[in-house]
Length: 441
Image: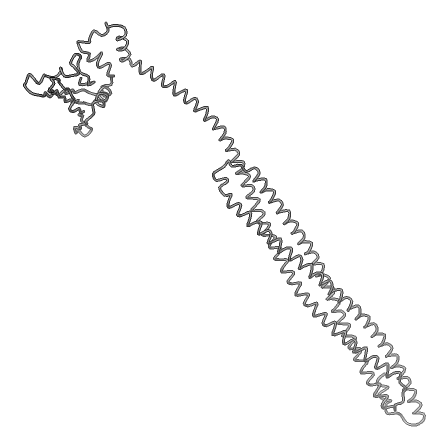
């Protein structure tokens, strides 16, 4: 009873194991059992069990356990007491002794009333041996193992299927992640290309500004050409005036003729100076035309370069659209983690990149349109300058012919004056304008 908590046989559930209270003329009797033993770890354990029997009014005795405890000495030499419930201490004491409850009851501490149980009938004998050798627990354990093995086999098959499924999903996720990284790298490359194209557009814009500045210089040259045209017209008027004077008869005296010759010589020198000035202007205009032609070639080259840039932008936009469509067509809802966590940011980036490309294309188209307009205007002005230069050259040719004619006329006039002077000398005295005529030669 001290070890397993079970009363001896034929004691009416323990009531007859304790003295009857009637013998002492009391209503209750208290009892206590103490057992000291050494456990499997070589520690001394003391088991304390306190019981109580009470006589009731209906002559029935009530047996109950008052207190149960274990007392032991710890590593510091101090005594420790632990209170237990009935079931706990009945289970704990056999474990501390290292034997089962069945062996304690039927082998070690078997009661003399039950010492002949090996000679009992087969059923009870089998039950005793089953309790001693725990065969029932072994059978239950085997059954539990089989059941758990079956359950775990089902779980393993399910987990294997899930493992294959998740393995496929992981492979697809890794593939999509690799494609995402590749597309991200392509996006970075496209960003670099867009930045490069923006730099090219800025360079072209700077070139266009420089061309506008040069066109303003061409406009200034055009104004100078118009001014030269006015001067040319004035020279034409002066030439006609000289012709009209040369057609008149020489009826003036020698002094007036000499004055007229001096004036003619001065006009001739002025015409020579004007001719040299116009020749310089023609040379400068020719250089300007050459510069404008070079600028025209440069603008044509830049226009071709802009068209190539526009073609690259179109191809880049088409390539990005194809990549995005391909990624969207293959991007299933497999990854809920890091691989597709940036979908919203990627969509915002795609919209921003598309807007940026549209702006760049619009700016490029506007720049190309302005460039074409400026090229057309520059070409028109260049053609006009060429026409005016050609007219100026024609005018210079006419002026040269006129100058030669005037020289010939002046020469004839001098010869006529010399003849007249000789005639007058032979008639009497030298004329006052002889020295001037000699000097003019």
